[in-house]
Every structure is written in structure tokens, then in C-alpha cells.
Length: 592
Image (cartoon, rainbow, N blue to C red):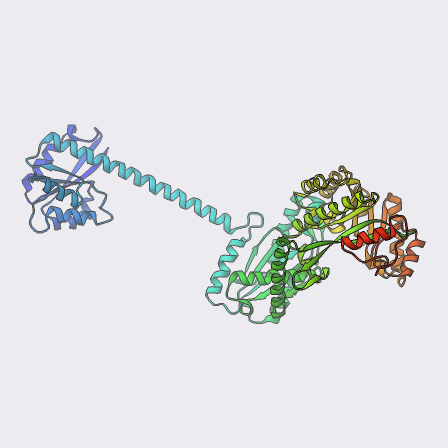
């Protein structure tokens, strides 16, 4: 059985006795299982003083009282957050509309005229208590809901701040702590950003389950490098980050980085597997960079990127020179965005010849940047940045489209036997839109796909050999030829090489450049040529610049070549003149 607390405020005790007598019967209750607990206050101040004890669910309030009258008490109660929701029934002998309006204006919820009628009192009391009960139920529901929300928020917070795989703090937690440390003006702060080298090869070779176990093992090994009070977080798939809160001695921090990298010298044991893995680290010291957590982390990430360019197992400290180089790179990336928007990229074409006769058999499409103020920008100045940016896929699509359009035009002008080789960057090869892009471009240009060759680097295909094989098979189903570019500089596995559905191997220019001076390079070239013949692949030598190189390649029975000995890359108009002068059946004169 539940009870409602009723507070009657009236300076005449007899009125309390009347109200109690009229309501204190089972027929007067809100429900049969409810009871009323009556409290009396003889004035406004005593009512206020006793609220904590009476804790009313309903107040029946006389209007005309000395001191704090009913209207003033009503206003005060409604202004008190804890009691503002308690219904108030004004009990008054005043019956003018103006008086009743004053009661409602003071905050009263209802009123009863004197002399009190039992039926009216019971009805209005029940009505107000129903409202009170609904309010309490809603309040209880809101309290429980708020508890559930808080509990769920705490769960989400834990999920947000903890990496589920390694149980290390997450990137979000690290950023929160780093930002707080920066606000505290922590001058000895340093950040070490670590990225594992070639981790995707592990997933590709052994599957993601082994890769996940390896990440857990790496996290455990890195935990051993934590200094007291420092923070280690997992930032991404194979990226981790240390925040060093007391980096007083830069040389000591560098020694700590070297020791951390040395922990990777021993292979990781995953089940029956021994997996060697290396890592690179970028180091940024807060006081050298900025008070911004984002800027410090970006600096460490930039230093890590530069470390990876130095080679596996390297580290790099962010400094002023690196900062300026980063700014230059950002400016270059901005200019490249504009170049793509303004159609400043153009195709040049370098002839590919049959070595035995020097006749042109095809071309390789090479991108050039015709800058509005700097003129023709050297490829070395922008292609590495282009390939590392998100622009490489739309730029590659543009290069492919223009190359197909140009080859179709040359076919129509009387040279139907020419082929066109187009490079696919690693990002473009891994793009989900690649096959659709190829289909759209072939349909748009009307080019016979048999005359198109797509060149892919070893690095691009060996990241995930199985997936690369499936994709290459789909490309070959379109009657497009495939070439492995810069062969010999990557890490191709012969096991995979004979399984790849490829047509050509391109010997990297670094081997051709030294073929006349290095017996080792000559042996490498000879081995690649023998391998190509055994696998039924055509072999093209890149970077031929001297007659001696050409003679050696010809003696080794290399079938195709390209290089400055024959021609440098040329714009389409100059290729038109070249074709008209030599055709495709006569030797190509030296143009460079």
C-alpha cells in the first residue's frame, strides 16, 4: 500500500479538521490501496520550514493568511526547483474571476471555493494526485533512462578510449591526453610515432588472424619500452605512438628510440611461425614544434614518413629543415590539386623499339606537368608527391584516357600495329574503381584493348599476391596485356611470378645503366632475359642510352627496348612528325 503526503496550510486549524474529515475515508482515496498522510501548517513560514519533513505530494493552500499569504507562498514554492512540481490547490472564499486569475497567475494548479464541498474536494484532490503520480512515474523513468544512458556512455567511452585488439589506449585517448598536456604547457613533452614495415605482406601471406596475433605480440613488446608515467597507444592497423612526458635530454630520448627499434631484431613467434618484422619511428619534441597536440602528432608522423624513406628500421627526428620540407610538400600538393582542376597535366610518349631493327612498335605514356608560370616541370619534382597523394587515381585515369585516345588516333592515321603502355600506380591498381575506369575508357575511346599494355610495379602486386592475381586475371579477360615494370628492383617471388597472368617484363634502367661496366649487372640482365623466355614473356629493357648498351642487349637476344638512345619522351605533335618520317617498319633515328 502506498501513501500520499497532503499538506494543508491554513491559519484556521478548524479548516484543516474539515479537509481531513472529508478526505480520510476509503471512498475519498485515489485508489483503494492508497492512503493519505495529513500534515498541517498554520502559516506560510511554518509551511516552508517544514517542507523537508512533510515532503508533500499535494498542497491545499488558504489564500487569506497573515504574514506570508497564500499567493506569495504559492509563488515561492513554484520558484523552488525541488517543490515546483508539487500541485497546489488554492482554498479560497474569493469567487471573482479576477481573484481566481490572481491564483492561477501565482502558479496554482487548481482551486476550491469555501465553504468546501466534499465531492468537489475529493474530485480535485484525486485529479491533482493523478498528475503528481504521473510526474513521479515520469521522473523515475527519466532517472532510470539517464542511468542507462550514462552506463552506455561509459561503455562507449571505454570502447572509444581502448583498442579492442591490443587493449592499449586508443588514438582518441592519446589525443585527449596529449591535448591536456599541451594546455598544461609541458615543455619536456616528446612524441614517438612508430609504424611497422611491410605489415601488409604478413596479412597477405598468412591471413588476418595471424596478422592480429602479430599486432598483439608487437604491442606486448612495446609495453616493455614504456617508461613510468608515459603513454603508449595504438593509432591504426600497424601504427603505435608513445607520448614521453619527461623528455629532458634529447640524446637520451634518441637512445630510447634506438633501444625500442632493437626490440624488433628478434622475430615474433606466432604459433609455429617465426615472423621477422621491422619498424620506423618519427620523433617530435613539443617545444620545438607547437603547443597544439595535432601539430605535434603531425610532426612525428611526418618524421616517421621520412624515416621510412631512409629504409627499414630507421628513425628520424623532426627539425626545422624537415618542417620547411613539409611546408614545401604541402604547397606542392596544393599546386597539384590545382593542376588537375585546370587540366595542366599532359601526356608525352616515348617510343618502344624492336632492338634488332630499331623500328617503332609502340609507346609508353608518361605524364608531364605544364605549369602556367614555371613551364614544363621535371617529373622528378612532382611524380613522387603525386603518387603518394589521393590525386594519383584521378590523374592516372586522365593519363589512361588520353593515351587510349591518342593511340586510337594513330591507328586511324595509318599505324594500326602500334601499342600503348600505361603505368598503373600502386594506389590506382588497388582502387576499387579500376576495372570500371578501364571499361569506361575503352568504351569511350573505341580502342582495341589488344593494343593496350598496363604496367604494374612489383611492389604493387606483391602487397597481396592472391588479390593481385585475381585482379590481373580480370584485366587479361579484357584482352589487355600486363607488364611487370622495373623488374628486379622489388621483391617478386618466383612462385608468384609464374602464376601472375602477365605478358611482359621490363628490365629496370638501373641494371641497363651499368650493364657495360658491371659483370654482375650484365649477369642479372641475362638472368631476367632467360627467365622471360622460360615463362614465355616478352622482355623490354628501359633506359638504353649508349650504343654499347644496345650492342650488349642485342647480343643477349633482348627483343625490345626504350631509352634516350632512340628518343626522349615527346609530345603528340612531335610523335606525329616522327611517325611520318620513319613509319613503323623503318629504323628510328636518334632524337636525343
